[in-house]
Image (cartoon, rainbow, N blue to C red; front, top):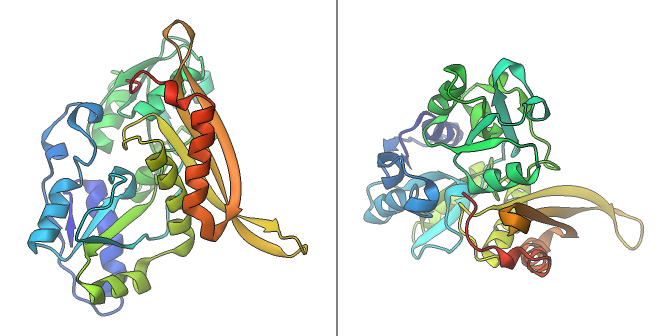
Length: 309
C-alpha cells in the first residue's frame, strides 16, 4: 500500500490498512516521495496533482498494489489504468481555526495575520471583510501550527479532518461553520485506488472500506469542481450531505443536499463569493454537481480573472 510519508498521510493509510488486516489480509505500507514533498512553493505554482502523480506512477509500475490519497488532492480527470476502488467514511469536512490566546475568527482584531496555503480559504476569508492579513504558508500540520505558537502568525486555518486524524483536535480554537467557509470539495475524505485490471483487489477494497454515503456526497462535490473547470487549488468550496426529505407520497427518503461557492472579482480589486445550493435524489449526485456549477457560473463565477492568492 503506497502513501506519502507525512504523519497525516501515514495515519490515513494506516486506517485503511487496519481495516484490511482485520479481514486477514497482509498489508505492507510503502512510503513514496512526491514532487509536492520536495517543494515549498505555493500549490497554485507547482500544480494540481503534485501529491498524487508519484503515487499513481508507483501503482502503475507495480511497486505497490493500492494507494491512498487525501481525496481533495486528486485531479478531477480520471487516470487511465487506475480505478477509484473505495471511499472510506469521511471525517468532519469543515475547516478549523487555530489562533493565539484561544481566539475565534470573529475575535481576531483587524490586521491580524492568518496563514493558509489554500486559494479557496484565502478568497473566503477576504470576502468576510474582517480586515485580516492573509499570509500564504506551506508545510505539514506541526509546521503550520508552530507559526502560531512561535508568534509568527496570529492564526492558521487547517482542515479539521487532518487535525482529528493525528489527535490534535484540542488545539482548535474554532471549527468554522460552512456558512462562513465552505470546505474544499472532498475535504475530509480519502480516495483508495488500485489498478483497473486488479478486479479482486478492487472488490476487496469496495467490500471492506467503501462508504456509500461518503462516495455519493463526494461525487456531487467533485462534479461541481470539474464542471467549473477548476483545479484542486482553485477558490471553489463545496459541501454535500445526505438529508431526509419527503417524496410525493409523503414518505421519508434520503436525498443529497449540495452547497457550493466560488470566488469572483469584486469592486476595486476585492474578492467576492457567489453561493448556491440544491437538492437531488442520491442517484443524481453527479448531475446535481453539474447543475449547481452552472448556477454558480450564471451568478458570475466565470468572471474570475485568476486564482485568488
